[in-house]
Image 1 (tube, helix red, strand yellow):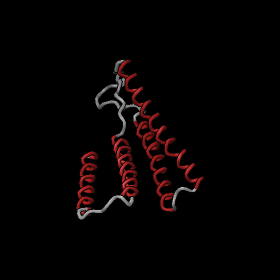
Image 2 (cartoon, rainbow, N blue to C red):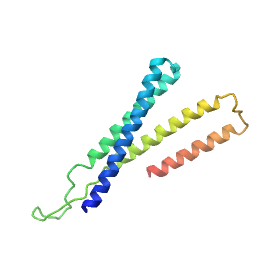
Image 3 (cartoon, rainbow, N blue to C red):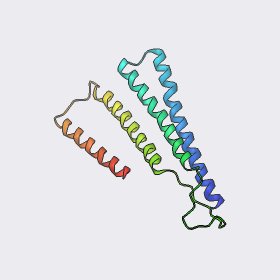
Image 4 (cartoon, rainbow, N blue to C red):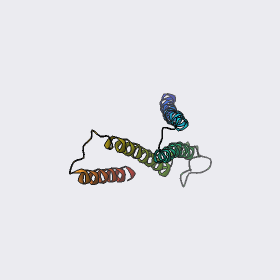
Length: 150
């Protein structure tokens, strides 16, 4: 790997880590303020704790994923100990998948929470096809998630 390629990957990962920390801070600071002011209902307090925990889980899974790529790569079978071997570090695909799935679950829950607040707005009128639309949305989400996992 060239040094320029390494720098590109390093900066991309650095930006990814900083973005995650920014999201965490953008969630925690307002949540603490709203808790302190008493703006949350008991139902919303529960959701905020769950979402905060999932954001923390994202960070933990991301670190476990990165840590899995820091191990010494295995030498291929048949290669003698005297031969030089520089392996390519790879992250474990299970940790990568868990990190991605938890992000999708977190995004879905936050979107669902936003829509539940929007749907309770007095100007939004329900319509007859809500159940079919809900089923179609859940089916599409499940198929998309299955495609991503596979």
